[in-house]
Structures are given as structure tokens and as C-alpha cells.
Length: 207
Length: 207
DNA sequence: AGACAATATGAGCCATCGCTCGCAAAGTCA
DNA sequence: TGACTTTGCGAGCGATGGCTCATATTGTCT
Image (cartoon, rainbow over all chains, first blue to last red):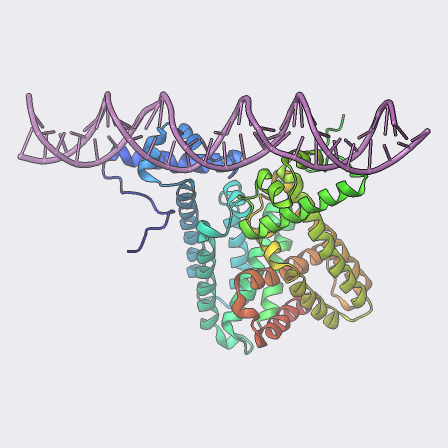
């Protein structure tokens, strides 16, 4: 009897009216996360912000975590689209060009909705019910590893699994930290420098 | 009228008795953080676990955040000691040797009190009152940059500030992620491989 | 010993939280 | 139109949270 996890929506909305309610709830959750942070995002407040009664909220989501999970999913879908698009665009290119493009994309991705991204990255309890961020990363590893495989002849001998881990983790950390904590590095000219450096880091590592 | 931030202790303990109380509070806070997580760490519970009345708790710390901040400080002092020790030990060595040693140290550091480290890294609201982790990182950048300066002749021409950022961020991310999310990478043999890879990444980047 | 400061206590106030439940309104279908 | 389903409502319960304050105990100093 697989008890449904507490982060899943409770039921499908079938009528137009209720779909609007659900949208309003997710939108409100995102807004409050950005404006007030995770701690202040209570179900009561979310309902109020959405212009929806607390009762209705619980018709569709069993908990605050479920709502946040919905927001995460929406955000991740957006990111994943950007990443997949980039990887497709880059599939045929040699490593140097490809990596450069990917670094640039990583920065862009962090800039998609930076405020939300920040909250998601910095305020969420990453253990327990909200471990979704992990699986997202695993998918990225896999995609990058696939690219590396298609270019194996340009690489030194190396465990591609591990190489993908090293590259993705590094790029992610550099772009993430730069965007969120070092605005100075990203102002105008310097953004190009960061791209240069990150590219160099990864490319020289790979071959 | 510089209003004291809410993460500072309230007053000094002058007698022996009260110093014991303060210790018990911090110890209890750490224990509860590890065992039950940040959310469950209420002031009432901390006081109880410390065998101290809630009133006494508020004699010394104005909020839960203040207690957590104290735990962070204690943890960071330990880490900083490890890091400084390592950097001193490594000061005279050429880049290759030095970086290798530092990577190893970074892994060790994450293993100092991994459970606490995990909670601190994953469950803490990093904005607002608990931004101390930032300043800690800044100090690490500075130390590493100083090392790089002492070896400038072995390096290509590069902004050392930026280079330190790239190296430290990468090493930190690799070791952190490996220790906390990829136990497979660190089991027995493979830990050496990770050290090799991280070292290669940084060394080839630098020259 | 007596006076004063430092320390410790915990009942309990008030705010907020997550969440339920009985009922009203809107939509669907015959 | 009437029967039935879906959706929406919000007062309010029980639990827990942060935190204060009047009081008791212990330590220090002369």
C-alpha cells in the first residue's frame, strides 16, 4: 500500500475554475518565498496571498512542502529546458566551444529567476521531503556525461562518470556562487573573464 | 545607536557556574541540530536538553539564531584551525604538492563533524541573521590568495583574486558534494582518485 | 553576618501554525 | 428543473512557538 508522499498534490483539478485556484496557489507560494522567505511562508499566508481560502488550499495540497515542491518542479522544468536546449545546440561542437557555451548558459540559467533560485538554493531544508534538487542534478550529470561520451576521442583516458561529476559540480559552483554572492565578478566586462576562466578550468582538466 | 544584532550573546558569564550553563546550552544546541534538525530546534527544547531553564537561556542568548550562531562559530573555529595549519604546513611547497595536500585537507575538514556540517550546510537559512558562513569563506579566499602570491612565478599571468575564487570554490564544491551526496566516490580506493582529479583540475588551471 | 549582584527558575502570555469540518456556492448532467 | 458533484469557504481547535517576569537561589565582598 504505497502511501503517497506528502509532497504530492492531493487531487486533480478538473474544472476550469479549480485550475485557476491551483495556479493562484503556486504563484502565491513563489511570490511569498521570494518576498518573505521560506520560514514566513505559512499555509495561511499563502492562501491569503492567493485570494483563496485555507480550506481550498488543503483540497489540493496536503502541506506547505507540497506547495513548495510544486514551485520547485515548475522552476526546474524551466531550467531543464534551457539546459537541454543548450546541450542540443552544442552536441556537434568540439570541447572548447561546447564548454564555453555551457558555462555561459549556466550563468544565464542562474539568472532566470535569480531571487527564486536564491531562496530555493539557500533557504530550503534539503533533507527530508524536499530532496528533489538532488535528482535534478543527477539528470544534469547524465546529460553531460552523454556529451563527453560522444567526444571521447578528444579526451584523455578517464572515468567519464567521475569526469562529469567534476566538471558539472565545478561549473555549477562557480556560476552559482558568482551570481549569488559575488555580483562584483559579474558586472559588465568581468563576466566574460569568468567565462574564460571557467572554460579553461574544465577544458584543460578534460584533455 | 548601533543596535546590537540579534545573533550576539546577551551578556558575559563571569562566574564558573554560568559558564557551565552557557556551555551546556551550546552543546545542547549542537546535539539537537544534529539529531533533530534546524526546524525542531526550539528554544524550549534546547533549554530542556541542556538541563537549564528557559529563563536562563534567555539570560545569555536573545534568540534561537543566536544559539545557532554560537554553534557555527565554534565549528568554524575548528575548521579554520585545520585550514590554517594545513596552509602553514604547505607554505613552502610547489603548487602541485601544495594543492594535493589542500584537497586532502578539504576532505578531512568536511569529515570533522560531518553530521553537524551537513545540518549547517543544508538546513540553515543562509540569508538574514545567519550569514556568517559568507565571511568564513572570504577568509579562506584570502589565505589561498596569499599562498598564490608567494608562488606567483610558477603561475601564468592571471588576476590572483579571481584565481583564488575559482580554485577555492571548485575544491570546496567538489569535496563538499562528494562527502555529503556521493559516498560512493569516497569509498576506499576512489577517494585517492578524487584527490587526483581535483588536484589536476586546479593545477592545470593555474599554470 | 549582612548587603548586593549574579544567576537560575518555570508558569504562563500571546502569537502563530497546520489543519479540519460543516456548510454554501457554482458547475454538470439528465 | 432537480439531483448530484465539484469547488470554495473560513471560524476555530489543539499544538507549539518565542519569550517575559516575578521570584528564588547562589555567590561575592566587606
